[in-house]
Every structure is written in structure tokens, then in C-alpha cells.
Image (cartoon, rainbow, N blue to C red):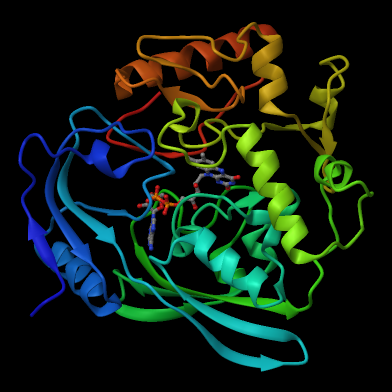
Length: 349
Ligand SMILES: Cc1cc2nc3c(=O)[nH]c(=O)nc-3n(C[C@H](O)[C@H](O)[C@H](O)COP(=O)(O)OP(=O)(O)OC[C@H]3O[C@@H](n4cnc5c(N)ncnc54)[C@H](O)[C@@H]3O)c2cc1C
């Protein structure tokens, strides 16, 4: 019996059921794949038929238009974590693309493998983490990814891509905004250690009662990150509408130092290349958009200024109206352009 199911969705089954925002209209067709070869076959079939393709895993970084996606939606549900090797430089762990990310982090922490503990509690699947080089609390997956296994639609072959080929940047990579590749698995190089990598993020170091550069037991790092995240509505909780979001809706803007000097006092992180990164949450609040600021059935989270949430009766169009209002308000106040972090599917701001 095949593990692939092709389901033309009934009109009442919309893509909203597959996104953490609980927004988005119907799919053309919906295919669920639990094995990698089935996922590749589905992508190949869509390519051959000239059909548009949308890969969805956790649906936690997509905003899908109210009219839905008139093409093939592939729900990736492959699972698996295996040790692929070990040497002096660490343990190589291969993770299937559909494996829930936090299950992998929990596995690493439980097995004394260090390098991803500060990425605890991030929703979505492991194979989605290279797409935007997922990061939080001073770690990003580019620090530990050794290779990305991907089906290349253009060449019709499976490739093993190096970090350089992935072109990781701040919340971006070669994979973002491009449907050329289906990520099938990711290799992480982790250190065999019971202590965390040095803590880089000041807020986390403070919460741990130490300072930046400290190492703490892996479990302690994970628990503390989960606690900090929960306080900001950044751990999924179906009962808490402050978590019905895509996490941060905007990236932190990066501006040239000369322009930054004209802006006046504000928190910032100086970059190595003379650029300056500014916290988008600070700009949004100081442009007059506090936590809880509401649109039509949507609102800024009551716990985090960067999260735009569906309060239950929202629509994608209302969410994007709110995003536009905030973006334009920040631009009018500071002259700084905010850019959305999630992938917008058949909709735009
Ligand atoms: C409450 C909350 C907190 C969050 N916190 C963070 C955070 O701290 N840091 C952070 O970086 N992000 C954060 N996010 C965003 C999101 O969780 C991550 O970007 C996550 O990696 C998305 O995974 P997903 O499986 O849900 O991807 P999806 O939303 O399913 O897909 C996202 C994009 O990747 C593509 N894609 C997915 N899988 C594949 C694949 N195998 N091959 C090719 N393309 C693929 C999709 O087509 C889509 O374009 C948060 C989101 C929420 C809701």
C-alpha cells in the first residue's frame, strides 16, 4: 500500500488547517508524503505536469492568501534522526526534512550533543530550518549545518549541498523564495558535550544568572530558552492566540552606519561590515504600535511586538493590512524600511 495520499481538498478543508496562523484558502490538490522518495516523486510529477508546487511542513513561516494556492501542495511528513558518523570534530546527525525541529533539539540535549540547545521551542520541521537559516538566542542553524540534502528540480537529481552553496545569511539562504529545491534531509555537526555552546545572547545569559561566554548544562539552557520563549508567546500553544502567528513578522532592519547615525538614540547591534542592525520591535513600539494593537480580527501579540496574530476571526487580507499599517508607520517615523520574514504565498504587502 502506498503511503502517499492525494486528496483534492473539500471546499471546507482549507490550508488554514496547516498553518500556525490558521489562515489561508484552499489548495488545488494536497499530497502527504511520509517517505523521502514519495516526496521527490510528488515534486517530479508536479514539475512534469507544469503544476505550481508549494512545499509545506509545519506551516509556521508562511502567509497564504485568502484565495488559497491553485496548485500542488506537498505536506512533508518524513521522519527520522540517525547518527551518520563521529570523529574528533563531533557527531554528525542526519535528520529527515519532516522531523519536527524541537524533537530533534530534545534528542540532541538528551543525548549530550551540543550546538542547537538555544534553538529549543522553534516550531516547524528540521528540513525547513536551512530555508531561512533559523536562529534565536545567539545560535543559528548555519553554525551547525554540515550539509543539506536536496532534490534539485532543475537538474532532476539529489544533491548534497555544502554550507557555502546554501549561501546562509541573516534569515535567508539560497532556498528562500525559490521552489527549485526540495530539502530532503539535513546533516548537523554537533559537539559531544554535556554543556551548551558558549552563551552569546545577553538576555539568556542574564536569565541563566551568568554572563555571555558561559557554558551551562544542556538541559538548563533548553529549559531556560523554553521559559523565555513561552513568556513571549513564541512556543506554540493552541489555547493561546498570542501564538497564532509566524513568530516575528518582520526581520530586524540592517542599515548603513552613516544612515544609522542620523536616527538618534536607539538600541542596536553593530555589524562586522560597518552596517547596523536595529530591533524591529523597538521601532514598531516607538512608531506608536504597542502590544495588542488591533486590526480586523488580527492584532499585535499581547506578549511580543514583532508577532502579528490571528485572534480567531482574522483573514490574511486583514493581517496584511495590519502589517502595511505598521510598515508604513515605521517608515514615516524613522525612514526605515521593514521587510516581512515569512514567505508570502499568493499574497503581498
Ligand atoms: C511561535 C513561533 C515562533 C517562531 N520563532 C522563530 C525563531 O525564534 N527563529 C526563527 O528563525 N524562526 C522562528 N519562527 C518561524 C518558523 O518557525 C521557522 O522559520 C521554521 O523553520 C519554519 O518551519 P516550517 O516547517 O513551519 O516551515 P513552513 O512554514 O512549512 O515553510 C516555510 C517555507 O519553507 C519552504 N519549505 C519548507 N520545508 C521545505 C523543504 N523541505 N524543502 C524546500 N522548501 C521547504 C516552504 O515552501 C515555505 O516557503 C517562529 C514561528 C512561530 C509560529
